[in-house]
Image: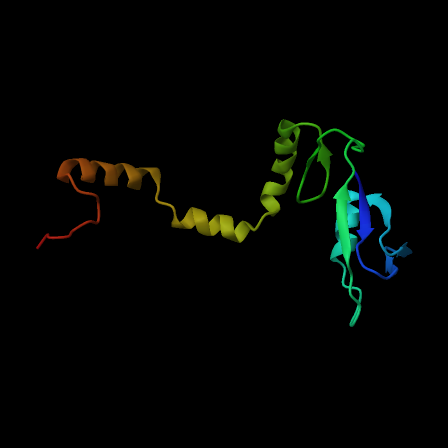
Length: 133
């Protein structure tokens, strides 16, 4: 999607962005891809320079349908199902030590069954010994 990058300041603005010199006259605008415009707006121009930039989407300029994007590798997919299928290749690379810690802290099915039986037998939850002497 394209967008307008407006210079709302009273002075012409110029900055190097992605290897190109971007010039926006005071009160004027340029057209830029939306994601690039957001990145441009977020860059720090330097000490003592005031950046007065506003980004507006231009409706009807979508180049592609609503694509699903993988946050790990930026691959795009037409459907949520395709993205979910793709995401399985990343599951092993996502913080395996965290996954192991979660597994280590979880009770086994047998332990959960035993706790449930204890709760049903005593009418209290397992480990809740308030008032018991």
